[in-house]
Amino acid sequence: MAGGKQTANRYDRMEWAGAFGDLGTLIPFVVGYIAVLHMDPVGILLAFGISKIASGLYYRTPMPIQPMKAIGGAAIGQGGILTPGMVYGSGLVTAAIWLLLGLTGTVDRVAKLASKPVVRGIVLGLGFAFILEAIRMMGDNPAIAVAGLVVTYLLLANPKLPAMFVLLLLGIGVALFQQPDLPGRLVQAGITPRLPSFALGSLTLQEVLWGGLLLAIPQLPLSLGNACIAVVAENNDIFPDRPVTERKVATSMGIMNLFAPIIGGIPMCHGAGGMAGHVRFGARTGGALVILGTIVIVIGLFFGSSVELIFQMFPAAILGVILFFAGVELALSSRDIGSKKEDFYVMLVTAGVATWNMGAAFVAGVLLDYALKKGLVRL
Image 1 (cartoon, helix red, strand yellow):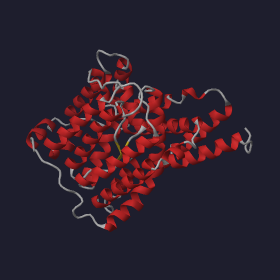
Image 2 (cartoon, helix red, strand yellow):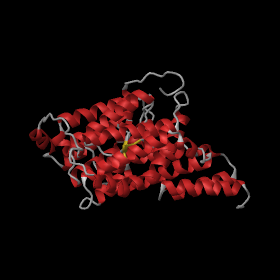
Image 3 (tube, rainbow, N blue to C red):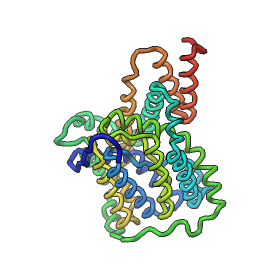
Image 4 (cartoon, rainbow, N blue to C red):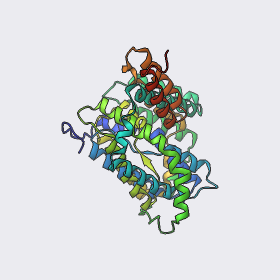
């Protein structure tokens, strides 16, 4: 278990509200994998659900489980070239890399290269990236987005009526207004209980190699910055009584990606943005992850054929609002950088590069910080 005081998971209304704080990243990628690569939704959702429950029970903080974004973006964007087998192969290669980095402790030594300004810069840049993506998503329906923003701001600190519940109801109402036939289509699809199939039976060595080269390796720098260094810093700032280490987080990413491809799951990671979303909407324990994981498993096992229809209940503009608040919450965590000019400069440069590439931001920040401290560069 993570060290520190034993804090029990809660399952109250705020944990329920916070459970949905990461939908802005989860739904678009899951729908993309299903619609473009025609992957089995049962395996994808079951892998997510099990991983979320395990994360909530183990860490006892809102330690999120998210799709790996670089892999997801490449796989969905090149659906005519890449295959589900390559996605499974990339998961296995990803698992091997993170288990190696975690179990040997190498990831701890790499993380120690990052000073506080570098870490805060990565977090700030990720927050900016979330905000920009949120604005793009809200552009799908600006009127609904503005309504969602107003509702969220008015209820953000209200423990009796969590903003997330009203936001989700608003989204469902909009979906039903825009698609009045949606309930009928859901009823027609019905309940279709089904277990996932073994996904690696036809996997070839070639698919594993191409999945590793085209998907897993390009994802590594992003995961190092966001899913490891940044999420550890965020967790330990918000929950000092339940600290985690880079080594622990890397190992858990390795385990989940070793298991997921077996049942048809996609590459997954932790992520600072996801934690910010869960926390912003009320989550304070791992109970939020257990709640969401259970819901995802039920949808996968009993409503696999209706996943795309169910997710249409959450319009892009509403998902954008959720993502916007997660980005703002994440960016706010960099406010403790202090007033030293050099530290602030390193943070801003790192943040700027991080909006483009997390790995490059890590390298740029570390080198600039070193140069400033050694007097090789003067401001």
